[in-house]
Length: 261
Ligand code: MN
Image (tube, rainbow, N blue to C red; front, side, top):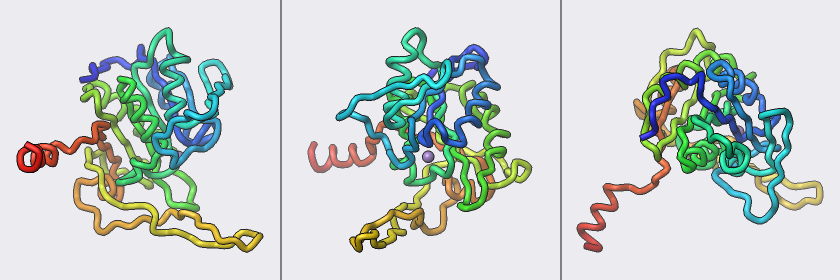
């Protein structure tokens, strides 16, 4: 288990994301982190990496640009950013807490398998650090209600870290697309289902050759009660604990007993 952190004011907090150094949610999360602790560090990708998943850069060098003291842009993926921050930049003292976000858009259901925001959080978890991913849901082209995430994030982070949780688990928070006063509550949820990839758009480039663009459309029926998708649909903040150990124990045991004893 991660040790509870009863007092975050002495904690070293690492902020990362997948929207990059110019991502609009970065400064929101930096303000949230700064309201909790004076020891806040930022390590994020140079460019937007949404959808990059948990990819690691192995075939080209990684360059670190110190944008300001304690703020670094890494010419790589979200995973690279967290890895270099923890094992190269913050070698004098590792972070006590890693925050990833605040992502511009939802990370619900199967999104977590593609999300760079969640992958940065997975990397923090794999490095042995308590980690929280944060995403603000919005409906394009409407403006993003960053003020909803900002109203609730610090208190939720403090409540979560006051408890500690298993070392192979990260917390995935999604803030609903409603005004702060209309948030219906904060709920623990399970990962729902709504697969991306139904909205494949085929067009032709200026030379007449066809290309495909993956659109935002997702398939999924009625969201069952208690899932992340259902909770945010009712205006609640959703918190889903995600396990980086993907073993399915029930299936393991069944095949171990009956097929390969
Ligand atoms: Mn993103």
